[in-house]
Image (cartoon, rainbow, N blue to C red; front, side, top):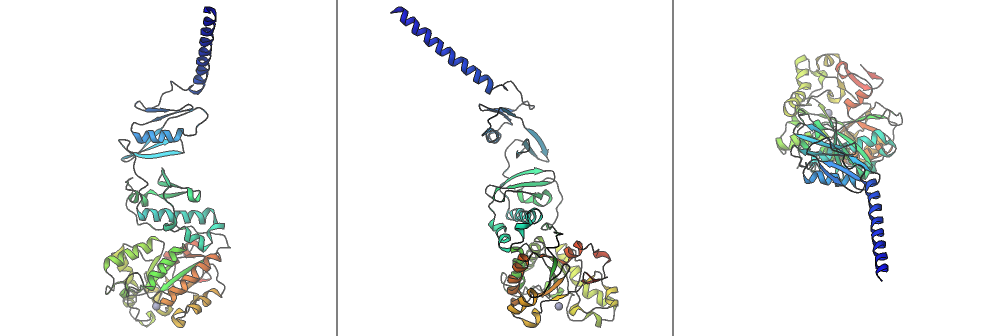
Length: 428
Ligand SMILES: [Zn+2]
């Protein structure tokens, strides 16, 4: 009886020893990195069976440490680096995990991007598609899906790489890089970059299957209706929908007309339009005279320069080109004008037909070549309706629809030394 009891105890002790021994073996394997220290003196530690992560004090650090240890199966140690950015830290674990804190390690809510910031990110998504995935880009319906309203920002993550906010967009399996100089304000951070007016990024595709054409709109802006319903606004909205841009040759007197729209409304309309890549240029101050009828050099200059001065004062915006009324100009006009004249080679004849189908047919039934300049008038509702059909169709055909400045840049034409431009084969 006594013997059997003893035997039982021995067995129990033996079994227990075995468990402890096995446990020690496992323990040693899994925590072989115990004893390793962080390079930071006040670092906290988070451990799992296979992972040891250091983090700066504060529950947000713990959250990140937990996240990086999740799913780690091979034994690993993660130490962090602190990179100071002005009043902030970037805490980084290798290249994959980065987050931002203030100097007390409180996590910054970088996910609370303003509406303008979100728009910037969606602009860069379309830019990245055009640059890296052109086979998907030239599709009007697809481009519409990349508008800011259609982007899911809930699981977009952010980090900083040099001067860029790097946004990871899981919905499109894409990383986009938005310059901090533009987006710092929209994420409530200040990295010390001076203010710079945001303009949508443009990428010019040099593939000959994607001809570059400029869309131009004369005689506006149409501010003489209730805000939200003018032909000018409809055209600007359509261009945005399909990541297209144009140049608006505005008449000074109309630009300054405040009968219906307020200064505030005009300012923000122009700012948004410029932000989305549209260009503003001069179509003279009064549109009354053919410039060739004016005999005095000063009068010609004044007519062309009116909108240039106004845009400079009102928007801090530099106008680069002008369009002569009815396309009439001569050598004395060239001599008197402060900027080059931009003519056109494809006329939509919208001013003449005032018919949606005819405007569409006029543009879509002819061959358009790289370097062509198309002329429309943004003062007609029929033109706005036609543009809603023409722009997606041209995108689907593979055209790049750009402003005049972008068109000239793509052809390496120096605006400073240009006198006039009709076509890629006719300019001086
Ligand atoms: Zn005109």
